[in-house]
Structures are given as structure tokens and as C-alpha cells.
Length: 452
Image (cartoon, rainbow, N blue to C red; front, side):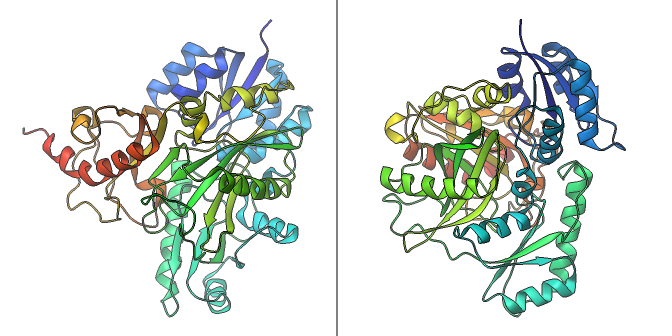
């Protein structure tokens, strides 16, 4: 008899069309909806799942999860939405099921995370809590050099800004507050109660790829994708990035990472210390680092969930590792079959990336005009190498025909029109084709604009 899994489904995480079949092939799935899915997503949920339930917006989400999990006699409760991790973890503890554990709140709240890492002695930038304009002014005075301000519960670079010494912080504060309000209205914000400072000010990490990459064109930060089972952390693989654009807006996540194996293992060792400091129990993890010119790293953040965009699919395509299935097995209390060591470029069978569709080129220059978002009309073969395939990730893209959103450095993923999934033969071709798309998409979309 198949086990029963309750999926707490909200915004964020892997695309539904990728995620759902991987779960329903292994379990009877009931879904607790947090927010309203798109019509085609609802149809997919109805077709593949046993029942859909709606979480009451005026009730604590942890209570809703416990009630529905109890009613359907769930053997496992899972979420892949970063905004639902904390209440899901609380519900799993109450139900006696494997889950992220008490450290989920520390892994979700950037201020608590920084404090935990400072206590554990892992590499951490100087930081200050910020909950008002006066706090922000004081933090900028106390922290040396440029400062980056982040929403403590934000994600996807929403509500993030840099402040240089001498800048007027008042307009920045207004923009940050507006970006967080927009995230809350869009459903891309924390579900459940939260208290404490809303923002975090950090010293800007002076990172560099010097001494790390032998090839140019890669970003100075990356992430370790992993899994915690019963409190034991297992780093699985490192994924690389293209350079970000202001303000640290992510363009592309890429696998495999071409760093030398000994450098990758060094990073994974720090990831282990960082994740262990968060006191997690059973969940996927996504731990981000900045690379330093002196050969060390600095931690950005670590989430108690799988990476967003198409990271889970990249791992499957490149390494044959199904992180969704592994996390599901762990949530059921099984012992998932893990690779046993960090996966390296020599283990890869291809190269794959998720690439943001954003009205900016690879250097951060905004598009001069905003054409309709019409990816089906684009001749992708004119932008990539013959061996490269390009696919729109429907579950993480707006409707074709809608207007491209304007790029703004403080709105993060709220300025994305969608996500592309690229697959090709090797990581250097992948890097070059991703840049060609970013630099050529404005013209390509303008060419395919309807003439009448």
C-alpha cells in the first residue's frame, strides 16, 4: 500500500510540473494549498493528487497542517516553499513526523542565522539588526564601508539594497519597505507569525574569483546543495553562478561547478559546519557562499529546503540525483540512498542551468523598451549553440503575452518574467549560451512582436 503524503504547496521552490509527478509516483498525495494556484496548476493538482485542501488564511498555518495531516492520516508532510518551512517544521514536530526540526526558524530568519553562525565561529560578515530608519542610519555608521540591507524573511533578492558611505538612507528605507510590501501582496513572504527586526544590515563582502576559477565568466558566489537526515548533513553537489547584477540579483544557477575538486571539498566542509550550527533534523538544504581572494569563503545564507529556480532538476539531469525523491524518502522515515560523497564535474553526464528571464542584459543594463513576454515566438536556436536546448519553466513564468516587467535592482524575483531551463554538453558552452541569451533576448523578443 502506498504511503500518504501531505504536500504544503505555496510559492517558491521547484516548479509544480516537475515536483508533483516525482511525489505522486511514490505516494498518495493530498495537497494543502497556501494561496491560489494558476488555473493550469490547479488542473494538474486535480489530475495527479487525491484531494486538494485550502488553508484558511486567518488560521495559523501550523494548525492547518496538523489538522489536515491528521485527517488524511499522512505518513509524511513536506513543503518545498521557503515561505512555509517554519510552520511545516512546527507541524511535523507536533505530529511526530520527520521534518526540518526546531532549527527551521533559524534557517529562515537571516538575523537568527547570522547570530547562530557567529556563535559557532563560522565565517560571517559583521551585521546589525534594523527595524527603523534610525536603526539603519546607526548601522551604516557602525559598519565599515558599503552596507547591504536585506529583509530578514526575504528571498529572491526582494527587499535588498546597497548603501555607500555618505548616501541618503531615507529613500532607500522607503524603497525597501515598498519592496517587502509588494512581496507580501504577491504571496512571496513568510506564512505565519514573526517578530523582531524586519531587516538586517551587513558589511558588503569583498568577494573575488581570484585564485578559484581557471576559466573567466563565473560569479564570485555559489551554493552547496545537500540533505539532512536525522540530524546528519550530507553535501551532495555544488552549483555555480553567473556574475550577479545590481543589487546582487541572480541570473543563472549552473551545474556542474568547474572548480577544482579540492576547492569544492573545502567549501563543502564549511557548509557542514554552517548547517550543523542551525540544528536541523530532516530536510533538503541550500547553502550559499561568497568566494574570497585569500582562498577562504564567507557565508551568505542557508535554507532548510531545496534550492529554488530549477536547481533540483539540474542535479537530476547532470548527476542523476533526485533530491525531491531523496527528501521524500527521508520524510517518510526511510533511509535514502545517497551518493556517499560530494559529486564533482567528473561525475557529470551533461551541463544544465536555470536562467532568469529579466529585462536586463548580463551586465545589468535595463532594456530600453519592454516588449510582450512571448517566449514561444523566440527562435532560441539563433541565441545558443547547436547542442543546447532551451525550455520555458512554465510553473515559474508569467503568462505568455503579458508585458515584460521593468527591471529594478531592489525588487529581485518580482522583476522576473520567467525562468528558462538550459541543457547542453559541457559547463563552458552552458556559460556562454546563458550570456548570449541575456544579451540577445531583448532584440529577439522585439523581433517577434506581433505587427498588428
